[in-house]
Length: 270
Image 1 (cartoon, helix red, strand yellow):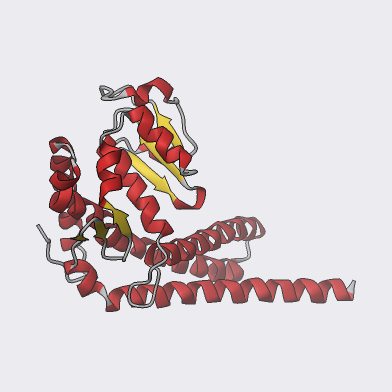
Image 2 (tube, rainbow, N blue to C red):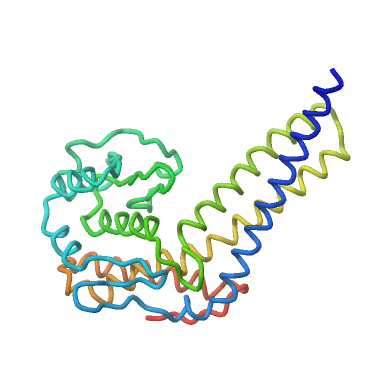
């Protein structure tokens, strides 16, 4: 029994040490983002020959994007699935379908938040390598999520870090901390252990605050880069005008959100 108690105590210490390390990793990464904020704020995608380079060093084949936009919706989805990307199409009855995506749509998908946020045309889930897309979405929106996939698969570092892969790993660790702390808090509330409850709540709040800070960089790096790509090179790759206009609308929204954020010094690139 004594040995069991010792082993359990060591296990708890190991878990606590891992939690502290995960929080430290988040701080280090957020500090790195802050240090390079000026670059990410002003950088724009570049094109050289047939290669497009995003600011996080993701490389994209220009011809591949042009060919993608020439496909039917059915062929585009088949092409993505042949790359082992899972595609879930949500039936969007409130919007008029623009393509044959409607032929295979579902009334529900794996991510309930996507179903609730009706303004989201698509979403890429990196951990599951899955694209969620509404049946009313355009090929440009579907391609947007494919580019998110390419960002996640990128292995070339920028300023010493592989941005999206490392950020996703850290966010996954923060989500685990929050989930674990919620479970502990619920148990401590039942026991009315106020001292331990405050300790676990502090850990939850620390992870939650760091998690919220990453939304700034999701806008600034991930989303802004794709919309700037569409605005800069949309006509070159054959992007329909409606998708270019949609990119302008979304860039304006990103600019408004980032300019209101006091944590960064941001100037809208459009």
